[in-house]
Length: 430
Image (cartoon, rainbow, N blue to C red; front, side, top):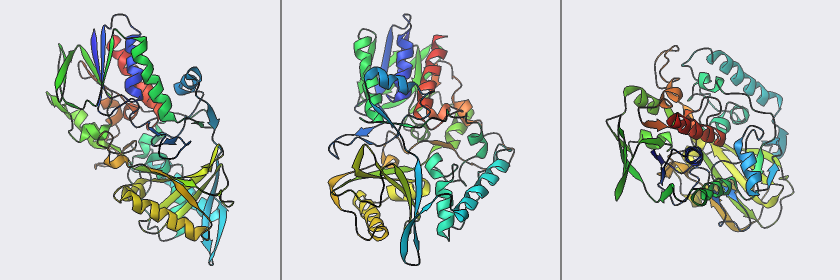
């Protein structure tokens, strides 16, 4: 049996390992548009010397449940537990101070969002919470620190379905693990083992952007710019935003259920930047996550220093704020963040030359950060949008779709990508 895998992220890598574990699979062809393994798990190791800047996935979540924990051990990658202190950087009467995220007024906003979510999740087609006016710092901080807010979902509470979030499985309660050399580096290293383990049966083509897939009951033909490969089955693991854009054409065209799924499943926005520091700022404690309001474009920054690399300041933005930043020039985003910090810390932060930034919205191989199920119309009981993840995961003859977006229990995560790659491969083997 011959199988093609479109996409070299963790879903594609996991699918390849699973397929190649069966001797009846004679050929596995992996086609990846970019230059290497990893997909949205990508680490920049050059922009800031000595610092692994994870551009996509940030850490190993739910480490007792996550296959990457054992993979990291097997490959000799050191991990470090995340510290989870959180503070708000607030201006009051012309003075700046750090306030706990449990501040009474902010906590009231967080509670109101949870109350809305608990009501909304009872119906299949209701967003988590209505869009607020955001005319106070309290409202902005409340939405940013809410576990249902953009830093968790990459979308705003008024954009995604509560019932989708309600299907998520419980985590393991363990601290997240940073990968010291970068989680993207780990995923890439895991993929790079494949040729040596299965040299005669495995072939990877990088810099190969698939343009069309022709599928029938007898097999699948995957075409790219200067060639094609004919196989017995195919697993497509590229992000749903790429599929939804029509970058890959299907012959025959995908049925209505799959088209609906690609309408509802979207990638939210998440932006990261990192700045090398010349001097360690005393007011930004390593291991503490801080939140700071941005006035224009309107949003909230989350930023921190890592205990294992305290001379780097990392900042995150999410949801509509991140989308607005992605439309700006990189130099203007750096300048915006620095100007805000200058005011919030009385010009006491000094930078070196190293810097790094992401823009997943403009990446043709991604088109965004990670998936959410969008409200696409209909009444509260309309089932169509909520069916998107499960519908896309149903095999279409010899054609299979897999990735974090087809997972119900932990979508938006690397472990979801791994689990779905294995699921699709097992379906083919069965």
